Every structure is written in structure tokens, then in C-alpha cells.
Length: 240
Image 1 (cartoon, rainbow, N blue to C red):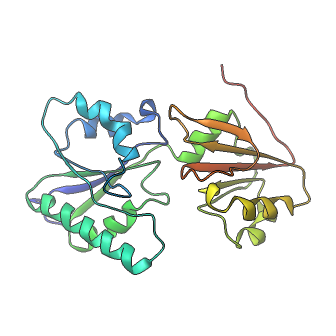
Image 2 (cartoon, helix red, strand yellow; image 1 turned 90 degrees about the vertical axis):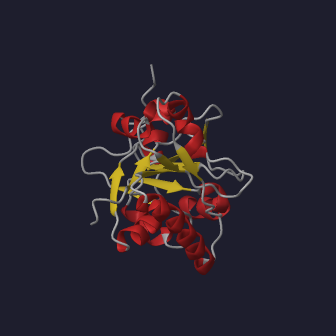
């Protein structure tokens, strides 16, 4: 690694509530010279940036924000071109000796686009670090007042709804399904096909002002939707 170059630091900003940022994340955001805040389109604001904006507004030193576009598409080649462009933007800052913090919802090591860009940056010889964040699904469990696992229970976390769920379902005591609003009907059919007693909770926009928690499956098209399914024994802990 070239020590004269800047570092890329992936920062997990949690599920939505700025109070859930870690102390280390806050300290880094208060001092790092460049913030990389990807967004899905030019005209759509970054949720991750909105979470940390209060910290940035209170900074003593000036900072720069770069906002590469990461569209919500399935075309792998097209996605790779966007990741390449983001890596180019970041490497320009790193070459000037400036550290870059890449902010991402939840944790940078779990289903985050940060990993694709980090791989490209690391291959170019730059230093890459991560600051963990509270994951969306643990944030959802806390908001809903439920435990995800006890004793030797198996917790299964899946990034989306597809046919693979059928083969995994029987092994799970708790299942966490992310981005559930996209294929709610398929999810409902798969879960209802399991003969065990079950409780289904969906959480949307966890930790945000418009957070919504309800029994059943998410049927609207909100991106930040997570469904938690507890089989057989379901415990709810009321929040004080």
C-alpha cells in the first residue's frame, strides 16, 4: 500500500436513525475530507447522506461530497460501469492524499454496494477500511420489540425473495427477508406453504420519521422493507 495516498473508509450509517451511528463513525465523519454518498438517480437524494447531514452541518472543517450514481437495475454489465465510474471519482481524491468515507445504509459488509467499489479500489493498491454499522434487520427487530434468536435457534437472513427460499425455509427458526415489497406475493406463498405456526412482521423505513411496523407482508413498493418471520415460538418485548 502507498502511504502517501488517501484511504477509502466504508462507514455503516445504520438503518435510519442518526442516533444509531457508532461513536467511531461520528468521529470519522467529523474529520474526513471527502464524503462519497452514492444515490440511485441524479434527482433522488441519498438516504445515507440525510442520516449523517446533521453531523456534517456541525463540522469545524470544510468537506467535499461526491455523489456517484448507483441505479436500481439488474443489468450486471451496466452496474459494473457505474462501479467503475465511482471508483474513478474516489481514486482521484485518494491520489491527492485525501481520505474518502463511503457512507452506506446498515453495515458495509452486508449486502452493500460498497463491497464492489472497495474491491476495485483495493486492486489498485489503495488502503481500504470499514467501520461497521447497525444492520437494518437488527434495527428492525429492535423497533418491533422482538428477539431474532435465542439458545441454538437458527437465524436465516436473505437479501431478496426468490425460489431458493423454499429449500432453506425448513432449517430456519427465524427468517429475515430484505427488500420484500418487490416480490410480496411470492414470499407470502412460500411462507404460507410451511406447516409450522408462524408470526409475520414487516417493517418499513426503519428508524425514520415515517417508520411503519405491521403484521403480515409488505404489499406496497417501498424499497426499505424488511419482513421477519418467527416460527413456532414468537416473543414480543414491549419497548419502554
